[in-house]
Amino acid sequence: MSAAVSFGGTSTPGSAENHRLVVLRHAKADWPEVSDHERPLAERGRTEAPAAGRRLADLGITPDLALCSTAVRTRETWKLAVGELPHRPRTVYEERIYEASPGELVALLNEVPEETGTVLLVGHNPGVQALAQILAGRSEGDSASALARRGFSTAAFAVLTFTGPWKSLEPQSATLTGYWAPHED
Image (cartoon, rainbow, N blue to C red):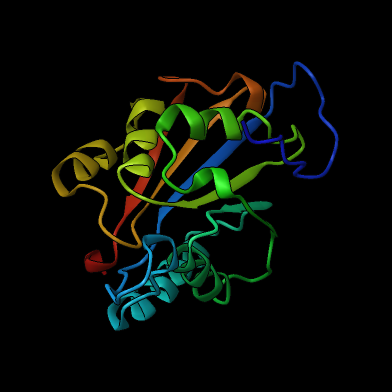
């Protein structure tokens, strides 16, 4: 069992704050003869990742905290995406995100300090798509149908909001407010 990682800050129990979660899948990876964890981005991925960062900036979404898998392709995705944001948030490279189930990702998010308004999680499929779908009890606009129709392509992200403490985040407790994929620009 992995030890809990401190994300910084202190928790305010019972907070009724509005929180936002951005779930970002890593950009397109290459398939060289290395372990899965060590796979780098492909050329297309090096184009997709900054596009995702630009789209987040265009939407005015700047995370307070980024949680990123330790896999090479997720770290490279985040490095290229964050360069497009107005400022770099605190980043925690978290090994528990690699190959995590949606339940494991929810448990990780439950550890986020209450004063953290927006969290961006950079991870892998099928975990990130399942996480977005499981958390979304409601959706705005055609976000849910876009996600259902297109799947969760590389460098795509879903934006979810919820009210209450991070420790109360659970299935069906959030609203899917947006979905974007690189091929939509």
